[in-house]
Image 1: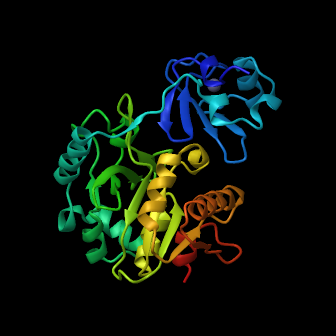
Image 2: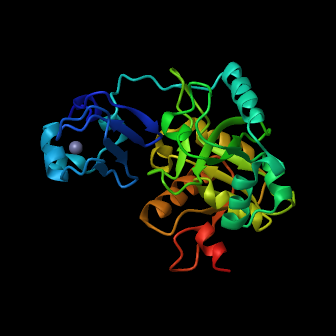
Amino acid sequence: MSAILDRLEEWRDYQPGEWVARCPAHDDSKPSLWINLKTSGMVGLACRAGCRFEDIVAGIGLLPRHLFNVDAEGLVAVAEARPEPVSPFLTAGLRVWLDSLPAGDDAAPALSYAQKRFGLPSAEQDRLGLRWWPGPQPCPEWVPTSFVRYPRLVVPMADFAGVARGAQGRDLSGRCPVRWISLANPAGFEWQRYGVFPGPDPAAPWVVAEGLSDPLAIVADGYSAVGVRGAALLNKDPVTLDALAAGLAGRDVRVCGDNDRSGRAFAQTILAALHQRGVPARRLTLPAGFKDYAVWRSTR
Ligand SMILES: [Zn+2]
């Protein structure tokens, strides 16, 4: 089967495991079709103009059964070369941009949100370098338009040495259709897919979780955390898995996926990858009925 994305016009990366393209089912002047690849191998399609699923599938020239058991190669052209980790030049550019954003008392709208939503005290927010994106203003070209439009809590994604190699912004307005938005990957490069969030106590366990909400809630509970984005493509990403294993070696590691099917697949992938690389780790299972760690914490 030829790559599904190659059948669509103007497709581009949105974030790992998610793409946008022109919708084939209506006269689409800008990319309105959202495509995502679930851990189960199912391709999700949603048109923001409200086209019916059947019409979109037909517009691509496929049958619904073609959207099951798809792997990343089936979705993206095989020939596409894997991007390099961001260069020192881009890492420096990211640092300059992050430092230009309001922090501490000047970032009250973002930081009071982080306090309320994740229970993160201001000392921890400072240590993790959280910032405020106040809304539209000039910015580097790798900050996507959809990021720029709304005010956000900006969370730097550091490596195990503490160097920020990526970031995500959490919508504060409630009006952005996507709550967390990553930086756009510059041509040929890829921002880091994980963020390291050391907690207040160096001896406390490390918890690996999906996305960035849970890690912030985990640090608020006194642990250290690693947040991984784009969980669906982890199996195809030995670079990230190697980095996680190297950084977590010798630590007391727990893995906590969301309380659903893809969350369990995420935990399984991480645990297997760590074990394979000689790093012992255990699963942290959330009590039934709680979607993820952040939700669980907010009810305690
Ligand atoms: Zn449409």
